[in-house]
Figure (cartoon, rainbow, N blue to C red):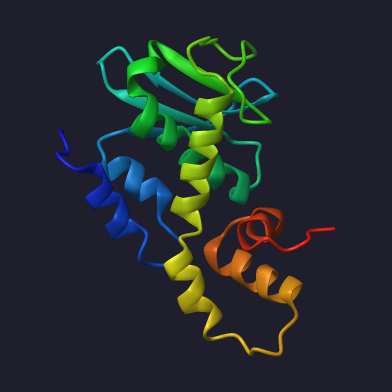
Length: 169
């Protein structure tokens, strides 16, 4: 399946909480698998034998981390498809690593940062955050707001604090 404008599909998925990142991946024609992978690998994207992209996520990770890893690998697909080659394996710090089956030296810090930003924007769109915040009492402390939003969007509290520029510790 070829999608002429993947951002149109992405924007449709970003409208409801929590963002259905697994559904989005499949809607874009990418295979998704949650499986046992190398201990230090959070996610991978690779070309399979059919010439289709496959995102594999570590089954041992928490649900919120799995969701972020899915979105991160999708970011590589959207922005770095020309650099994926046979595949990319990302470690716990979301850096391309040789721990998994693939090491891809075409993917550096700039690409990993872009994939992280894509993941944050996908899972925590500011329009959606703003509409959810309207339903929370204005007297609520910032950390409690972050906790509530993280719960609603199925992301970690730490990720939400970073997104909202709130002190986490």
